[in-house]
Amino acid sequence: MNDYIVELKNIQKKFENVLVLKDVNFGIRDRETISICGTSGAGKTTLINIIGLLELPTHGNIFWEDQNAIICNAKKISQMRGKIFGYIFQRCNLIPELNVIENILFPKRITSKISISDMEFARELLQRVHLGGFENRNVWTLSGGESQRVAVVRAMINRPRIVIADEPTGSLDEKSAHITMDMIVNLCREYGSSLLLITHNQLFAKKTQTSYILNNSELKPFDYAKSEQ
Amino acid sequence: MNWCIYLALKQLFPTGKKFSFFSIMSIIGVALGVMVLFVVQSVMNGFQHEIRQTIVSTQGEVRIDVNNNILYNADRLKDRPEVAALARYAYGVGMLEYNNRSIFPLIKGIDLENEIKVVELQKFIKEGSLQNFDNRSIILSSELASQIGATVGSSVEIYSPIMLKAFQTNEIILPKTLKIVATYETGYRQADENIAIMMLDTMQDLYGLGEGVHGISLKLKPNIRPEKFAFELNKDLTRPMHAASWQEINKDLLFVLKTEKTMMFFVLVFILLVAAFSITSSMTISVVRKTREIGLINALGGTIRQCGACFMIQGFIIGIAGSVIGVTVGALILRFRNDIISVFAKLCGIENFMLKFYSFANMPATYRLGDILTLVTFAISICCLAGMLPARKVAKIKPADALRNE
Image (tube, rainbow over all chains, first blue to last red; front, top):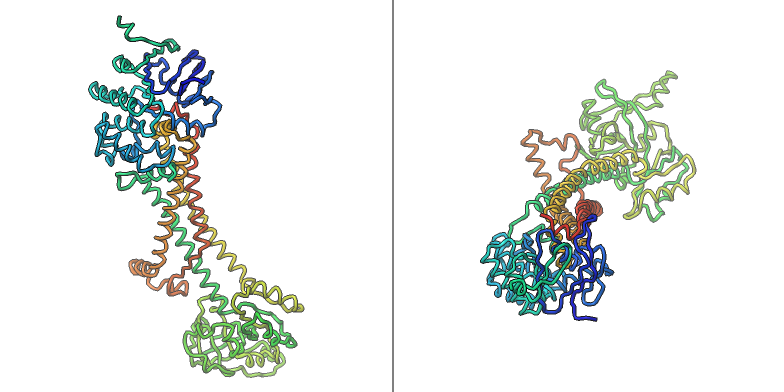
């Protein structure tokens, strides 16, 4: 029994004899903010896919809330994934057939039923990301920054225990990127979610409590303060 | 609402758009197929119904061939609870002459009083009246009358086979002169082509039948199945007497009608298949386009299987919407079919063609709930199958690959 929400033990991942992850031991605690940096192709996205069991490791175990998730069936994994994780991707991936509020409430629709309080929570979150009044806007009318903020709100709607953000500002300009990043960090802090941030940007990585670097298939802790000295 | 159904509905009818081109075209495709099948089947049913009605109206529901057995007591059939009315008849070929024109019709001798209780003779009278029909008169089919150029009021001479035999022994028997009191037309070619009707007494005299008859026509009480009744009756009859239902007598014609309907269904079903193929192809393209979306839904807590179900549900919704629209539009077309046909006939300059070729002034159509249910079930099943192929494609998608998809 430990205080990890998610824990990876001895994770190894190979793609056709190419070792991408080697003996990764890693965990995310409640309300912890973590960043993982690494060069392109280092295996960052593979790692977060394995954390959310969107991809199976070649070897090792993954524990979600002390349950060995690998031995669970696909339905159970999907249900748990929807409740534990909130995802923000580089591309906002909004569903074009749904408007803003429908997109935000969609994860809630998958995991449970939508109540009036969910609607109110969605509106509150939209206010927090300065998109109040955008509820009924069609998503194709939004700018890139606005779309990404809608995706941030969507990731928060289930009050996930962990928000996984995979280069969430990668397609935004610097100013929008900073605004969006601050919003993600603040919302996670305020609503008690842990944050796992995948980024190239050291400034953003410094906003988190713990940083890791993924290099040569190995995940190692990294201290920005020490490296600057 | 289950999120799969919700997403399927939203993908077909997206928020913020008046309509989705794919949905509208798919629904129209299915609706066209269902509508054409529904209209054609209903018209075929209508024709079948008209022909069946005409057969029953002219032949009765069951006929007993008593083969000139005068000992057979027809009256005892009246005691059977299934029998509503019965009429004796005799028939044979004779020679009919008018203005030196000779033809050889099938002559039917009827017991008018009972005959009109069994068949709807009055309904088919085209000219003249049954009121003056007696031992000195005859009724001709309108086609027979026109062949010899006779009209109501004309007198025709009848020669029976007995008279022809008498000629061989140099005996001279004068032909029977009968006055035409009416002409009839049933619309059923077999009954209209070559039949003359006279009183049973006259027929028995002419053919030397004495009190004998050739057969008995029966009308049954409502809800009595003629085939079953004929089968039961045959247990009591001794050979060569035989009872046959109208279905058995006309089984070849009924088989042709049934085969025609089945063939029509088979041919027209291809419209639905084409619509289903276009749905499959559009949905398969949609699966490729939405690969990232499928990965995202998986990340949000949905399973790949549920994503596949969305596509099947879309097929199901298209099937239901297409069927409802198809049946509704089909019913409207059938409701106004005669107006539509008359406009079409006027445009093509072929007025009254229905009457000329089919003997029906109006196009017959009969809806059958069973046919509609079969058609709708078939259309929905085909659309579900059309959605199943893309769903299978979705099932093969790996979530992580889908999310990496550009």
